Length: 119
Image (cartoon, rainbow, N blue to C red; front, side, top):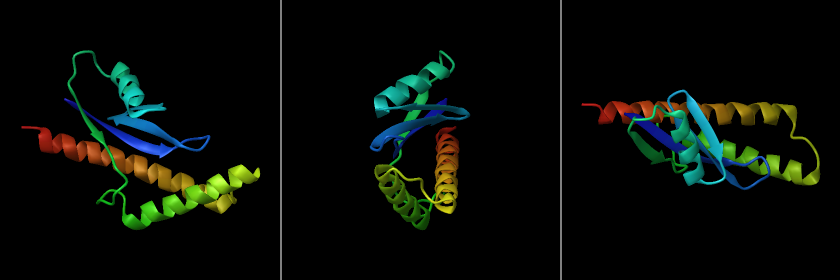
C-alpha cells in the first residue's frame, strides 16, 4: 500500500497549489483532487493508496518556528514579486531551504503513516 500526502503550497503566481507526495513520486496541481489524480497516474496500476491532506500544523517533522518563518518569507516573497523586485538572496535561500524541509517532512510523515498502517 502506498500513502499519498497532499500539501497546500504557495503557488508560483500567488495563491495556493497542491503538492502530492507518494514515496519518490511527486505531482503538483491547482487543486487537491488534481494532485491526487496526477500522482495516481504515477503509481503502479493495482496499488492501494491512502491519502493524507496535511494542514499547516506543527509536528515532529516541521516545527512551529519553521512554519512561522516559512509564512513570513512567503509574505516577503509575495511583496517582492508584486513590487517587481527580487527577494534578497539570503531570504530566497532560506525560503528554498524551508520548502525543502517541509517536503522532507511530508515524506517522513508518509513513511510514519505507512509504518502505522502496516500489519
